[in-house]
Length: 170
Image (tube, rainbow, N blue to C red):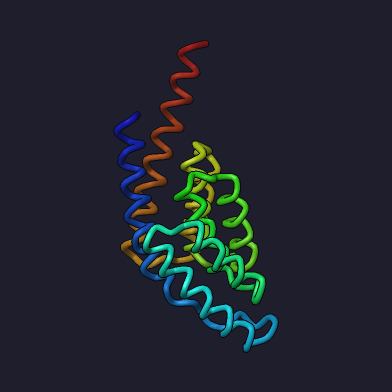
């Protein structure tokens, strides 16, 4: 069981690394609010990403919060803020930020992956599995899809093992 959790963590970390690499690029204008505000917020977001990559999570969170105040409709701002909260082990705040990202862009696999990772850290495995399945439905790149599928498989085995152990205990 511990080995499977270790494998799940490795798969999550691989997808996380890929997600961080992709997150530097803000997507297309979401169509809400002012495009000027969106551009202004994107500059602040970029500064936050540099801080995040240098493990300056409090400063990065402050930048992401500023970007969100300027333009609250960009899921990537919320997602990256959630990632910083995860790094600080502030999982309730991470979950809240990732949930907001999924509301803003429910068709983005990365926001569902971020939420799944938070659930993994909170040991909410059924929720983690559901979020990973939602990420898969958003058609991630093939290498990330493979890792997410592996994570779902590991979770399935763990949940099955837990059910089996509970049945034997009765």
